[in-house]
Length: 199
Image (cartoon, rainbow, N blue to C red; front, top):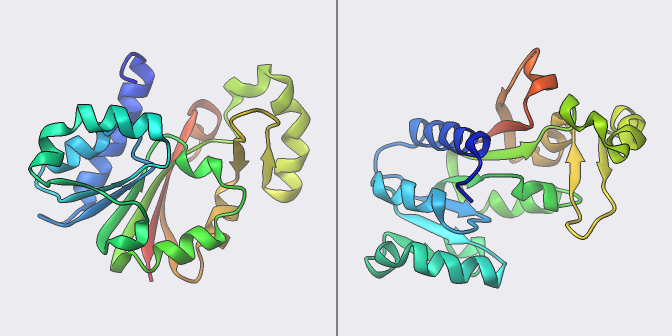
């Protein structure tokens, strides 16, 4: 998970943004926590961190990687997001791209995130020109223009979304506060960060 230099840089930027936004000592839910890499950083910075991860294989690895934090209860496993109330929810590395529609998810997260809290998501950038070499990207460009969404036929069931589609799904519970990148970054960055503020 830490082998790719590009992914490490993306992860570092995401973690820094999350930590800069979190008030001191605020609780956070790492949604789709994977192996616990981000959760370990949040906990090390004084944030009680709840982790929700549906994959049994990922959970097994996380149990080993974060064993000290789990033992000290600075990281707490959440079978459902609804079992906690936090200042922020983070979802790194395309977790939300596994959902076909985010409407029900944001409604659920509105019960989890405190007033004026936030959801920070790292999603695949559907406009990334590096993907233009693939047939699935070229075949779906008109779907993206017309509907702002398309799915890729694969085992991973990955969906791509334009930011306005996710923003519409988040309303009325959350409003988009920040979108990274802007401008030329739309063509050059594989990932986009979306910051939603609880209304």
